[in-house]
Length: 77
Image 1 (cartoon, rainbow, N blue to C red):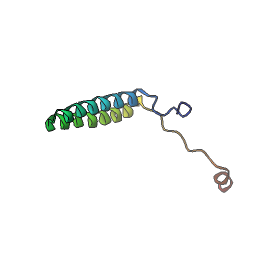
Image 2: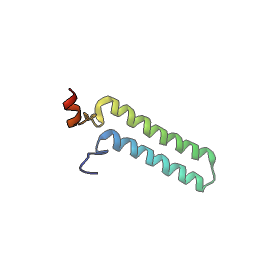
Image 3: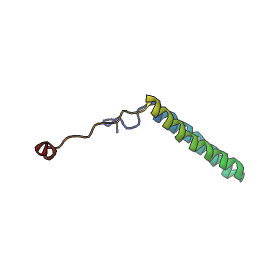
Image 4: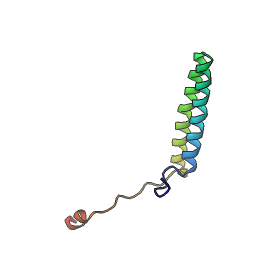
């Protein structure tokens, strides 16, 4: 993965960290048998995805890569 720069951005790290915290919250409340706390943790998990997406839109994510041109595409052009 280190060669592809997959997930090495502030948006990815922030989104995953928030989602992981939500997962831990949900897990703790499952053990305590408190459904409301479980669903609150799931809201935090979704919030992590939203925060990561917003940060990506703000330019803190990985830039989209241009598709590679193949030799067949060059001969048609």
